[in-house]
Length: 252
Image (tube, rainbow, N blue to C red):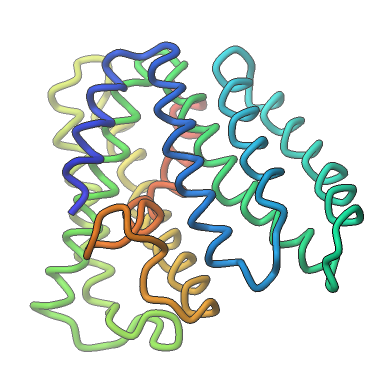
């Protein structure tokens, strides 16, 4: 389902530099557009979120996580002013919706760029995505084959506890096996990355499911036709890329 996205990611990740940053920005803008579509009842100021994604990724390319945080914090007063200048009837909710997009989507794509800039970050970035997508697939088939106990019926009725554990196991194995072909990645660090991906991927999936349930929609968009939007395909990665960055920053 995410094959075209995976191929494009591999190509741009190998190229690196500005092309990769521009690819990240483009994907981030699509996901931000879909996120604000889900939050439309809150009437967020989309322009603030779009500008934040672009600024965060560009700052991440030449700066640090601290600089990305500065941009994220600057989005708060900007969102407040933008909402106050509009005719929104519930300004507090509009500000909250605007900033949810910034912190959910913006920070994730900025951390993708931050991770890419670290030594061997391109390899770790692909390992994280592989673990995320394989874990998601493992959870799906594990749930179909062995699923008995609902995981979070009020959020996502089709997810099961058995599927969760299958997905987590597949995610850890995927990252560990990928690491066997990377001489600079020790088995211990590969396992640590795998555990981080296994733990955060399902949480990102459930978070987007909760937002979609609140919005009363099945898919975030239609970029991938019957398979939904970009946010549907990257919901887990929005969490795993962040944890992957901090794990690799701590151990490399």
